[in-house]
Length: 40
Image (tube, rainbow, N blue to C red; front, side, top):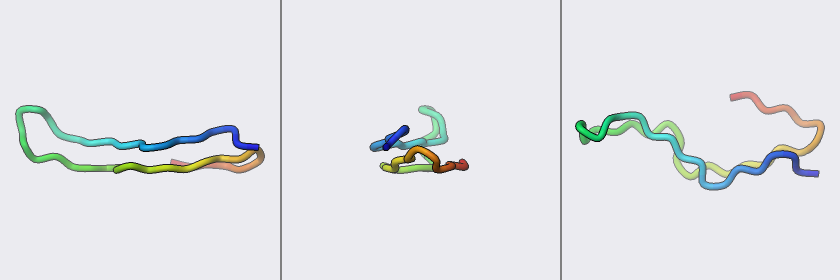
């Protein structure tokens, strides 16, 4: 049984003033089932 489902997760660090961006995550998908552990 899936208790957490993530689709299309992205995180970008940087500012709108600065054109340089650092992608920490890009289009990440995952599922966590009951009884599983997730560490970030």
